[in-house]
Image 1 (cartoon, rainbow, N blue to C red):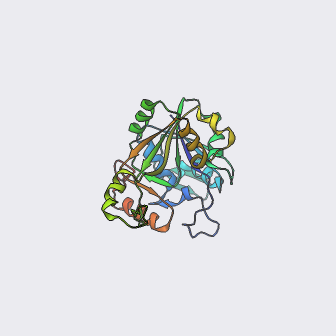
Image 2: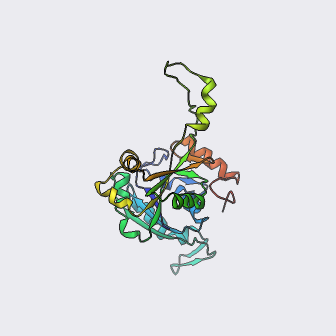
Image 3: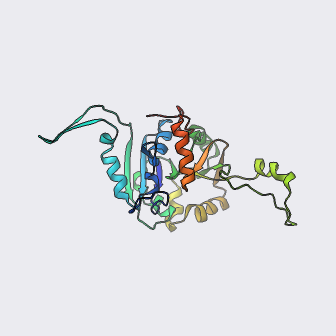
Length: 260
């Protein structure tokens, strides 16, 4: 099963670099966010990736073209212009990087990689989210439900607290626990699709605003509730929190916590 990563958004506002870099290339512990996402999937033996690029897609292509060098120690002899790789270290990954356009919707990006999908099902995830979703379990749930799509759901994270406001416009704190435990789920930006989804993407749908609504109406959308770690890297605060977990060796998105 292939993993499609949507990595085509505009430049990251987190980076202070003048030219800007794609958000999936933001550095966490010396490795881009994209590497961390891919490493999580590879722990479930999912090693074939299709990256839907857009803004500065050239940077993503260059990273994987030179991946072997980035991962290893090298000695450069400037006199005879030779390079010797001192420590061979790489990943068992097959990566396809596709330029899906700067302003394409999420649905347009997915529709453009149809020619690379031979299998009956595939995974789509976003290039700015970290999680410890049990991918194997999510795939099993998808297969049991026999729907066109299964969408992972997670609990909200961050400083903003959900507030229980009733029809009387008053706060009802006695309902807070029930609301948090039973009601509040958000899109975790990780999903399993059957190949038939490309039929619904012919109109170049936005995934959240159009495709999921259409599939729900046809009762072809299932959900997978994930109660563990999930975080969108959208602000400097989010980035620092992820870096702290990585530096402490307890990164939830990797089973071993950290892989140097």
